[in-house]
Amino acid sequence: MKGRVHFALFLSRCFSSQTVVGAWFLVGVALMPGVAVSRETAASEHRQQQDIAALVRELDYLIEHTERLAARYQRDDAPIRFHYRALLEQLRLTRTRSAAYLNEAHEAVLHAPPPPDGSSLTQRHSP
Image 1: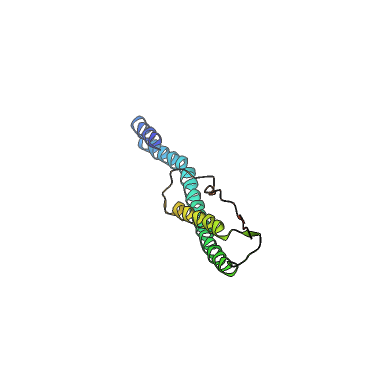
Image 2 (image 1 turned 90 degrees about the vertical axis):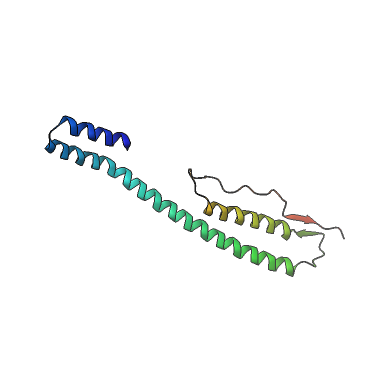
């Protein structure tokens, strides 16, 4: 943009005032696509922020529901049980990192979700 303004100033020194008005008009037209792209980018980023905030709310619900299930099945004595604590760790970690993403000011868009913790969701229980 700075180069375009310098070019317009160069034109104003070289040509008459009528030509300068025309040159400024051309510079304005040249800058308009950048403004439109900037607005679209801002709208897209705002939509993405809203979508991520909705995901964080959904993760809150999943965490609460998983806690209820863990309490319900805590006395399960089956030889192979679902590892609710590992799932809760995964959900909380993902929720924390997603919420942190919302609170950061990004220079570049991150194209990958937060990496998983790596814990297994299967827990072996010996009788």
